[in-house]
Amino acid sequence: MAVAMSSTCPGLYCGRMMINGSVEGECGVCPRGERANLQKVCERCNESPELYDWLYLGFMAMLPLVLHWFFIEWYSGKKSSSALLQHITAMLECSVSAVVTLLVTEPVGMLSIRSCGVQMLSDWYTMLYNPSPDYINTIHCTQEAVYPLYTIVLIYYAFCLVLMMLLRPLLVKKIACGLGKSDRFKSIYAALYFFPILTVLQAVGGGLLYYAFPYIILVLSLVTLAVYMSASEIQSFKNLVAKKKRLVVLFSHWLLHAYGIISISRLDKLEQDLPLLALVPGPALFYIATAKFTEPSRILSEGGNGH
Image 1 (tube, helix red, strand yellow):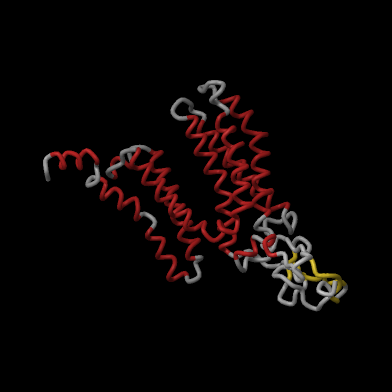
Image 2 (cartoon, rainbow, N blue to C red; image 1 turned 90 degrees about the vertical axis):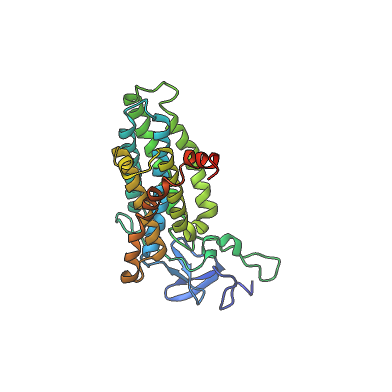
């Protein structure tokens, strides 16, 4: 155990405990909420999350809400007037879950969290960096180096699932009378599928999502907006403002565009980054301006005429 008792510890995440002002014990995993510093001593995480960290948590919190809304709309369709109330209930579930998750995370009882901060991608996958100094014995130092960004999302999903199972079945049974018995619970069944998928996604790809989520938001919001406007046959501003629902969808996508732009720029330099938000309406305006030139029937007719 000469290696374990040496002044410095092997590996990226192994550390020794600080007890009564002196470094004691063997090299190993730091307790939850602590991380090995440059001197390989376990140090309590007392940083406040950066803006980018909060934006990441916001993205992970939005995923179940957006999926709830999608499946509620998908299975309700035009057959039921209960969709709006289900949308509101889904938002209430996710909002309450987010607040409760923050309250139970250290410091307990406060709407704030203390964090270790993210320094590199490997911080999310410490299980891959357990050192073997003598190539025989492995020192296990797997820990949450990005505390609490990894586990707080999983806790939030658990609260979302519990609240949904407590509230939604009663609500749907009362109000979704326009749907058949088998259809009225389909949005809940869908959630029972996508919550495990989201959990695995966070557990396996949390670090990748942390660095890629701004670009995922921008690409998905652009694609879904184009698909929606095409499916709704919106080719002019008149078509766009014809229904309130279309404006709600448009402004929702604009909010996502702005969220993605802020996440990429991180608002490090306000005077340079804030003007980028002027690009938010760009895709919708471009679509409306060019829709008449890409109308399939027009292209086919011009092709048939030999033009």
